[in-house]
Image (cartoon, rainbow, N blue to C red; front, top):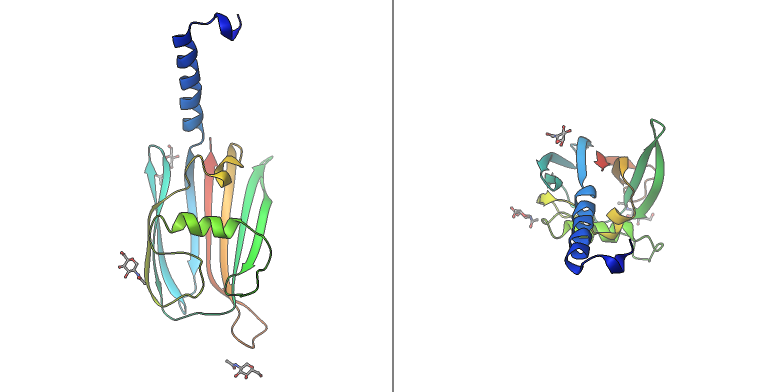
Amino acid sequence: MTSSTLPGWLWTLIVSLLTYNSLISARIMITKVEHESNPDYLTMKVQVNNETQGSTVDVDGTLFLDVTQGIFVNIELDSKMDGEYMTMIGTNKEMCSTEEGGLDPVVPMLNEEMEKYGNMSFVCPYMQGYYVLRRFHMSDDHMLVKMVPPGDYIFKMDLKHQRENETTKVQVFKLDFYFTIS
Ligand SMILES: *[C@@H]1O[C@H](CO)[C@@H](O)[C@H](O)[C@H]1NC(C)=O
Ligand SMILES: *[C@@H]1O[C@H](CO)[C@@H](O)[C@H](O)[C@H]1NC(C)=O
Ligand SMILES: *[C@@H]1O[C@H](CO)[C@@H](O)[C@H](O)[C@H]1NC(C)=O
């Protein structure tokens, strides 16, 4: 049977069922969160909510000092293959640099998403204060989500600070989300 022999209503039903299934299948479930923050800089509380459409994340953070230079963000996506996690994508960015370093789209895209759910973002400068993210999630049709096939992953984020005239960087925070796309 070819599609032209199917009654129109049946064809519509099939297409909508397929669409419905692919919406469900793009579900992101966070199974574990590990985080660590440097108490000289900030405190952070992270909570994962299990919702029917997938996981959402609440973050409360208090930054104790103003930081206007030397902030390095490292973002990595690890994928589980044969029982072991391997890095698929890794990106590193100096957030306060005025020169346009690289064409990395991941950090700006994340910032754009974060801005929808609160007042926390990676945009430099970082002023002391209390910041929140509420029910943060990546929508199923976001480009970054669509790029990633079903499987088990870790999204790793880590932020370091290199003080003026210093050669070493100190850890500010580290956050690992373990998640499954089914
Ligand atoms: C969320 O639900 C999934 C199954 O749907 C379960 O595996 C997981 O442990 C739950 N996580 C939390 C934080 O309740
Ligand atoms: C961020 O949002 C929270 C909640 O609305 C608010 O209490 C806090 O003052 C805001 N922080 C800044 C720095 O504006
Ligand atoms: C960093 O070094 C420059 C040049 O040596 C100096 O002018 C500046 O005061 C130093 N900054 C700090 C925070 O020590």
